[in-house]
Amino acid sequence: MKNIAVIGLGYVGLPLAVAFGEKRPVVGFDINAKRIAELKQGEDFTREVSAEELAAASQLSFTDSLDDIADCTVFIVTVPTPIDDFKTPDLTPLVKASESVGKVLKSGDIVIYESTVYPSATEEVCVPVLERVSGLKFNEDFYAGYSPERINPGDKEHRVTTIMKVTSGSTPAIAEEVDALYADIITAGTHKASSIKVAEAAKVIENTQRDLNIALMNELAMIFARLGIDTHEVIAAAGTKWNFLPFKPGLVGGHCIGVDPYYLTHKAQAIGYHPEIILAGRRTNDGMGPYVAAELVKAMIKAGHTIANARVLVMGFTFKENCPDLRNTRVIDVVKELQDFGCQVDVTDCWADSAEAEHEYGISLTDKPEQGNYSGVIVAVPHKEYAAMSAGDLRGYLKADGVLFDLKGVLPLGEADLRL
Ligand SMILES: NC(=O)c1ccc[n+]([C@@H]2O[C@H](COP(=O)([O-])OP(=O)(O)OC[C@H]3O[C@@H](n4cnc5c(N)ncnc54)[C@H](O)[C@@H]3O)[C@@H](O)[C@H]2O)c1
Image (tube, rainbow, N blue to C red; front, side, top):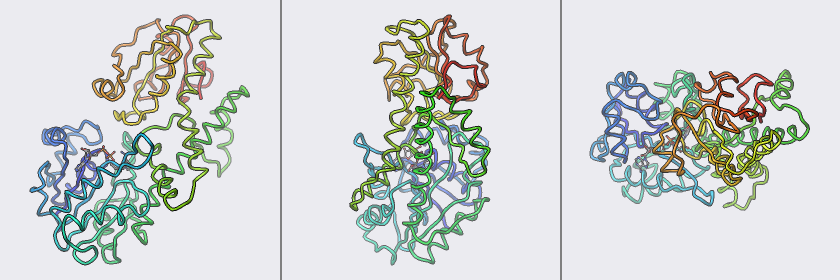
């Protein structure tokens, strides 16, 4: 049986390494020594894998040393693929991980990429790095595969093994081998794509489609707010038609939906096509933070509050509910805009790490928000702890005539003063 190395043990890599590690020898490799030390102690700060699940993966070991993966014959790369400040793909982690694998690559090995990329990145960017560093020839000495990840952090129902997985390989025989490898652990089944490019494109359009659908709902929410109609009621009514897609308005953050479309548009522009629709969706979604802040401020003014130095509580700072991930959270846009209006903003989040919030955004999280002291409260991220609170509980934080903004529409209709 081939030994597997998983390169990059984050939200994607760790659950995958654990799933394989229940069945076969796996070495999990990461350049972050602190992460490796924590995992060796049985701790996963992402909260994707429990201590019991880690212990059950009896054939999984962790390392930050390349020597320990030198015997492996299948390398699965799950490193980040972010965008830079100019919203263009930053392939540095992918290139660096490919250099590491190149150093230990042997004849007959397979390198499978799972990181989200634009179509052609595996063969045009990663494979040349593997060839350069290893001195081996692609599709003669070593092979490649691409199998995008579809996990949804914080979602305990859709786990790596219960989501159908798209697979692909650089030759028909390797595609079969890659597919069989995943079929061994994925109970939901696999879909063998006809090429690596098809598999790459499939992943990036899944998230682009979601981004655009949410952008449409956000645009509708802004129209309906002007018309005095509740968007969630409209969606509930329209959703009674069999083919209406019930997307909801909201902030679009994180490192998938708000990022992946830029990978696709970058590649499109590189080949001379200037995307209109995809970027229009991005513009709408990126503008939602300031819109949310302005709506709250208007409602606070109408309720008789003075905006300068008004105290506002933002509940939830992570990019999504029930997940500690702060990367690319768009709640920061709401906070910054409110601060620009002159408000004093407290941010609380029972899932986020305060040191990370301080380091990444200069926001020190409030542990225990004060009762009866805020002119506005926004439930920005409905972690289960916040979703369990009643409107009365939430209003407990407000002064008299304070404004409650239920951004994601978790409270029953009419119980909050505002929702998107
Ligand atoms: N998190 C998600 O919801 C999700 C879902 C589907 C796909 N993806 C994609 O999967 C990929 C990984 O995402 P993630 O959320 O797991 O990222 P992450 O940041 O949680 O984890 C990445 C890990 O890779 C490590 N790493 C970085 N450079 C490395 C290198 N050169 N060698 C070895 N390790 C290295 C980091 O230390 C980190 O532990 C990205 O392309 C992402 O777009 C993510």
